[in-house]
Amino acid sequence: MSADVQLFLKDIQSMISELAGVETIKNNVIKALSSGANPIDVVDVMSKGLEDVGGKYERGEYFLSELIMAGIVASEITSILKPHLEKSAKKPAGKVVIGTVKGDLHDIGKNIVIAMLSSAGFRIIDLGIDVPSEKFVDAVKREKPDILGMSCLLTIAMNEMKTVIDKLKEVNLRGDVKVMVGGRPITPQFSEEIGADAYGSNAVEAVKIAKMLMGNVAVDSLAIKSKKEVVEEAKECIRKASSGGGHFLTSSNSWYTDAKLENCLAMVKTGRKHGKYPISI
Ligand code: B12
Image (cartoon, rainbow, N blue to C red; front, side, top):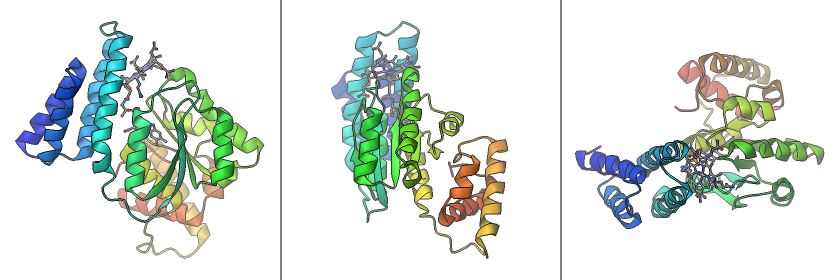
């Protein structure tokens, strides 16, 4: 990374933290990109800047008006980044229905996840924000997606994710769709507790996980003979991941006993390569 780009990125983070004018921040983002900055690095510094804003809000140094301003800045940056993140769109990799759960209006992170998934070739149905559980269930029924993504930034709204999963079970749709969850307060443990298939801590991970869930990982280098052998090794990968920390597909029994063979193969492949199963490769 050139010194110029490094400087632009550093400035963007502090400008967001200090809430410098929207136009000034946008100009810096544009300059950073035209100097060769990776859009993912811009997402990263933007998130760090927003983290600072959140911290100041918690400490009473900033108020709701500043939080709103931060939201405007982040939305503007996201729209500048979007075409760069979506540049490499390829053939459909799968279909994803995604939304922010009921009670929660935050959508910047979700929109970045969407941009990244689109760039990886996923077809996206965006349900928006403040999405009631019934709407998620209806969309799964109607759209028959491969993956349902749910985003949440508010601790008080987190349990909505469980409500959606429970409702999917009630109408016998849970087995038809993989569920992936994310957002600031969500953890791998929470994901597992509520019965989701996977958790991702950022947009890059979201893409890797979505591909894993689709079983789209090349498996040609695996010299594996039977499904039983694959499942056994996948269990071992999960065990190592659980003890090694990091982010991982949920380790519930149901995952690997019901998992598609391709997903087990994907897990084994990553596990073999890294000795454990972190999603951040
Ligand atoms: C901007 C902002 C707002 C804006 C949102 C604008 C918008 N269009 O989204 C506005 C002003 C509307 C807002 C409102 C509120 N906010 Co607010 N807000 C923030 C702030 C500063 C930034 C959020 C953000 O965009 N982050 C950047 C993105 C890129 O990160 P992200 O969302 O986490 O997404 C990444 C990952 O989590 C992941 N991901 C996200 N979703 C998904 C989904 C899947 C499937 C996967 C795999 C991954 C994934 O990938 C993303 C990209 O890498 C945060 C502080 C913070 N550090 O997060 C507070 C924060 C989230 N807000 C907070 C609060 C309290 C509120 C209000 C209640 C304030 C109030 N008194 O009214 C309201 C709630 C309104 C509501 N009902 O939702 C608190 C929440 C505290 C808590 N524990 O619940 C925070 C943490 C601030 C703080 N530190 O106190 N907010």
